[in-house]
Length: 557
Image (cartoon, helix red, strand yellow):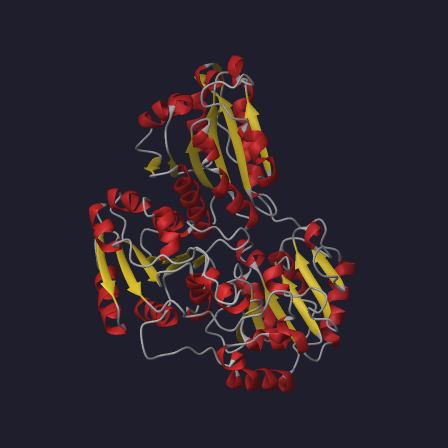
């Protein structure tokens, strides 16, 4: 049947079982929004306060559900406002389809009003992108965009459509989407045998889990693998929840703000088994000294990530869930009781600790864990609060922890929490923010209030840019250049003006009461938690140092 390009966009979204779109309208995309209005009972549209909020909301929806997130924006500044969200999704391998519309084809390349080359701008931060000038290419392009976003290592895809293509007509026929199968073509018997051989020889194996294990849904296979290998387990920021943080084998995060147990354990093991992780600089510390005398086996879907940051002994390329399924049938159950006893001694010697006398970031996170019984979806902004959320909340399931890892995007969390709540309406969703980050996205409280979403926003308010100040304190002789924020905004009054409930708390008891009320509220609640400006994230690895040289407050003294 003959449909306009705008109608084809909506029909293709329905084909892909898209139930929610996050966006902001404008002139170039008006045809699509007009058609969306006619299908508002089939596709829910969330009008965010800013296009960047739409891209982060689509990202949070995708990370928390495993589906493709979708966002809309108009041409020019509408499209460029998506860029940070697209880059965030790209760095963390999040399946996203961003649909933008541009000026009409005759106006392209003429510096027309609200015209930018958004395909050119986003080329380095997308898996693929398209510009559609001919309506006859639209259907196949949109279908291909969703396939690319979901296939293999996921990522964002941008489709830019000229306005005339949304008004012109073309033939459209419904097509059921094909199942996306895991990539297994590069999983070879030779690679599996080599990995199994190294595992059999190891006396002190350590398993390091990254975001790929979450993305592939490998948590059950990972649990079986760890039991067979009889090894301790650490994770990256993106790997949270792939292996339960409540398990005795779990040693915490690895890297710059990882635990001493993980950093020392990985440095002293004889085989590091890296599953779905790309060995980022935040994990490695000094790459020349990272696991220097350790054999490394890497399981990853992306061959580009092998031998990029560290040289490995052996690798298996493919979907990590499929790799684990196969290798679990090839290895016998091991007994590394001496090694596990050594790890237990490290855990007893170097527990995570913090000052328990007043309200602190770790105390807030532990109270959140207690009241939510470890079942909440936690989103974060970026900074000290992000690290405390990673350290002190025990994530027992995948897709429970949503945070900008690779790009480190301040302003990510609130939009992400909105997307997560839309995708998981029956789950508790809490965003943990710093006051610096909150300044970057508080306008999305308006979105949460309008949609009556019971999203809880916790501001860890130290009146400074906490993580930057920590570095200034430790490495810049306390020269606090432009990192002090104290005393100039009343966040409670601000959020109440936007339709949310607000609390300000200064003690652990006040926070516990406010959180209990927030969890039972009907709409968004913001809790402004006043903590000390000089609280720090411990342990820490200094820039350029080996992860084995991690230090805490006692070491510093």
